[in-house]
Image: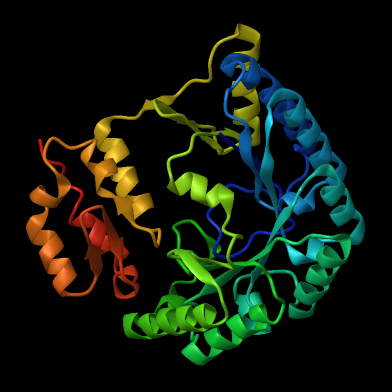
Length: 381
């Protein structure tokens, strides 16, 4: 079992971000009260759990933007409610400009043992394009603070494939990240999401790298990180051995989780539900459920078709691939028989590898992952 806590507050809106967030702190008190109430109430609904919590993730938004004392208080409340695994991973997302010595010490003493830093770029012009409010120098200062406090599991988020970026620039950015000695790197291809500030700057679309240039960047970046001892365990994630993100692995390997806060999702084997992307609407929902002593509404039942599709999307993102036994448990006909032609063609083009137990995407296949998955989406009846 895992827990996700969504903290929607940010100092500013980044041009590429499509996650629910707000720069207003007017509802901070309402959020703080409702979050604690939700944790307490849902624990009563779910009752005691047999499996200890393996991972807690504070995401956003910018969790480092709000009071570190409040984050510590939330963890205390959770610890009173659920049993923790002896090797629990507790992550907080943080932006360089809001990482201070005082906050870092409070996080560390509260039990947080992993910090994911929203670096995004080591080039000032790119930080401006992405509307990041920190400087390159501040990234280095933030890492120094966290190391001095005692954190030994740090991750950097990086964005690549943005306007006018070249392979050499991307490799420069990765070398800058490597110089910091962080244990984990998340390298996300820039996706221009609808209703973001970046999407409105339509002229930038013509400046994005071509598919050929993106392929070159991806393969060159992977080669550099592999050479420096990082393991690519998922299409966008690289880690030193033993530092793979437990929370991400949980999502990709079908581990149930409870999500708290506006826009957060919860997932069990049987169903899933997602909160409204509004502090007010989420707070109202939690209050109504608490007052009426009823479960949270809007549950989506997970059919075999939904489970199968999710297994494909999540399993093929991972370097280890996906077990054929797992897929076949949801199919009336063995996967390898029904999709024999597609498997043969993809293997011939060196896009996947296939054996009697699993199917994996190659480095080349990772560049066209969505099109590979599409070939397996039609379930046999």
